[in-house]
Image (tube, rainbow, N blue to C red):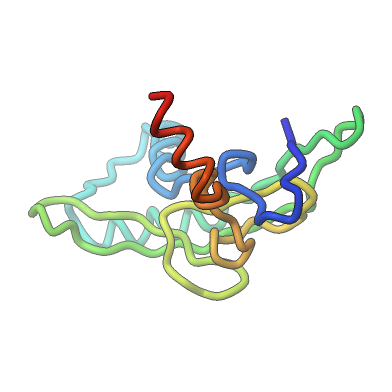
Length: 140
């Protein structure tokens, strides 16, 4: 699961990722009996307050063959209106920097759920040197 990066930044692909949209969708599936209209702003505010109250992430890591669980990480959420007309876009508020983000990451050897910038994560392609990129282009 976890590879040594030889002095390079840790990468996103090795981290556990949590999406704001999926979190809200899963929460909605659990509370089907309530009549929430997702086109009304008051219902969206109520939904977000319920998600914030009822959602903590307790993430699992495997270190040297032992399974460890992180401390509970609570999440804050917000929303914006969609530019496409109807609907809303859900966002997490990063626990460390307070930025509005769609995804929160939990990299190996961490206890905190935070954004990509706070964990200083890079994508795998960003760690490649120019010579490796050249070779990858040749062998496509």
